[in-house]
Amino acid sequence: MKNIKGAIAGVGFTEYSLDSGRSVLSLAVEACQGAMDDAGLAPQDVDGILEFNVGDSVPTESVAAGLSLPEVNYAFDWYGGGFAPCALIETACMAVESGRCKAVLIYRAMNGRSGFRLGGGAGGEAFRAKWAGQYRVPYGWLSFGQNMAMWCRRHMEEFGTTQEDLGAIAVTQRENAIMNERAILRKPMTIDDYMSSRVIVDPFHLFDMSLESDGGCALLITSPDRARDCNKKPINVRASAFLSQATVADPLWADSFLWPDLTENYTRIIAPKLYKEAAIGPEDVDIAEIYDCFTYTVLMGLEGLGFCPKGEGGPFASSGAIGLGGSIPTNTHGGMLSEAYVHGMNVIAEAVMQLRGEGGVRQVSDAEVAVVTSGATTIGSGCILTV
Amino acid sequence: MDRYTIHPEIDQDSAPYWKSLSEHAAKMQKCEICGEFRFPPAPTCYHCGKAGGNWETISGKGKIYSWIVVHHPVDKRLAEEVPFIVALVKLREGSRVVGRLIGCNNDEIKAGLQVRAVYDDVDSELTLLNFEIDI
Ligand SMILES: [Zn+2]
Image (cartoon, rainbow over all chains, first blue to last red; front, side, top):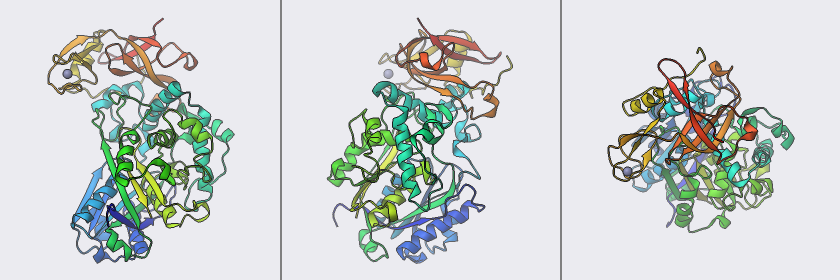
């Protein structure tokens, strides 16, 4: 079939929590087993396995052993952050398309709250004052949240984006999380609750920032032909793109020195490639699942993906356009702000659920085309998925 | 001073920069081929890819590109310093640098505001580059 790069045939989740009480290995294996069961594939049907980590996960070989995969023809562990999920889908599609693999698992598993806390700053290797970090860390600029706040401020200064605009994103996503039984944060939140929440790094309040959580999430990619014989309706990968911009930071860090304009991110560059490959435009997209480590990355995504003009993401979000009844329902599961932080894998999983019509009470009617993104700043990837 | 500062892990590329701060005359590399300044320090020019470049003293003047006010210190050892302001400054020479913004309040700051360098001798080994509003 023309213009289909591969198909997502299975999705697997563990419970999302603040303290799993389990090993990362058990989370990874459960998520992958869930994706195989969802698709109806046995160990002998799966011969590729990919994952990404920041030194906080378990290697593909161990997970393959845990799943008793008899023969693994391609495996890849990627030291990297939230830019990875859609890029790994692209890699899995290439492995399937080239004939190297029959079916490929992709997982992210972490005890991100009870174990290694990525957002915690000074503890991790990634936050040391070395490489480009030496020009930032001694001044007390330590965490990725501070980084995104720095990016966000520029947008507020240049375009008049308000605190309430950021709050609209957080509040909208919470409304969606309330309808999602997997979500960790399901307590109703008003814009007043948002505005009165603790200021962490001005302009960011507590609810501008994603959760830290424990859990695993996996996808199973196979060929469109094989996917038709699986249990569930195949979700087609129609387009994919990955920008790995030259950067003076280390791979986990956004480059605030060389990237020309902090009011826009990689979505600005990959969007035209995605739409061209899928032969559609933003007006054809039914749902957007945008990587949301922070509210501001959603705002950059809405603009970069062409759902509103540049600079107008704030008023657009505040208008209700991103709600379930709006023109582009966004982060319909609550995102990483309210569902869980599984480093963007859960963001893609939600797109698959919606396109299958398995969104439950939060299902967007007639959702047939989704755009999904992975990553926050100068490095990122994206896909267009269709029924 | 006994305040807590995380020291930079200085390498061969960055050593001349940190030394220039300790001399209170910040220097950056200027490409001999295309004439552009570059920061952070690097063996080759970000603009044209050519190696080399001369270390030249910069003006220390620039404009605020963006800034944050850190309330949660992330590292507990910085708890007594919060809130503090960290700015991303676009220098007259074209590069962006990071420094604390001192002597002003959050509500006085705007993108584009002129600032000038202030050298902060942290201890005998380290001088940081901070900024103040340049009226
Ligand atoms: Zn040059």
